[in-house]
Image 1 (cartoon, rainbow, N blue to C red):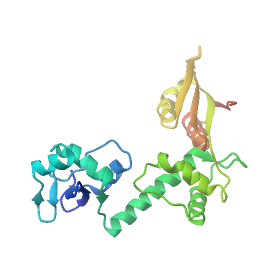
Image 2: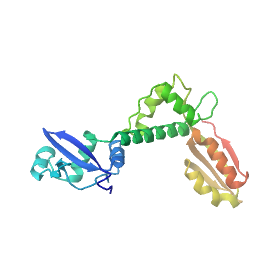
Image 3: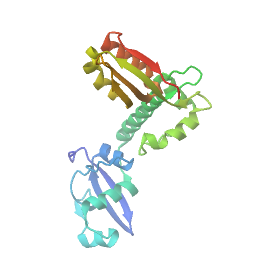
Image 4: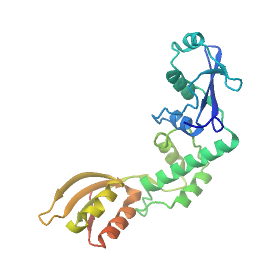
Length: 230
């Protein structure tokens, strides 16, 4: 739980009355954006005025929300109300969201002209050139299509997954099994008579080079890979 010194106020005017809660700014923002973790309260109270410590009465809560359950009311305040961030907090959170979006685009898209991902710096520049509007409260996945649409006139870009066939010799299986599962989804696998691990993995196209690099590093180059046809 965040300390009161680091907490910020989230507030709402509901059925004609003001209600406030003290929250962890980062967790509250993430919950507002769609994260299911609702552990954002700094104190387990609903206030009329948080600065004065003036708590809302159970009767006023029931009248406005139909319940006096703090957890349920807090979710409504975050989802429908306003989180009062400082200028510095807002700037830091926007930078963090922007970095998440750049990373997502770099990992999940390619330049269809080259078949390779765009470098993060090129994506950053394109976001500036296209004056892309980023919602720091919205999940990256929920706004990525609109962002890619805005980038399209400036940056040739395409969302794409790749299916890679891989054969790992028996002596390197333990070193590779953990790392490949962090990069994608294994859709098919079998074991060779010699103990080799043979599988097909589906990954975001932007991670193809990363996958090849890690496989070669873990097996000292003793790995077979093949890009599967769609």
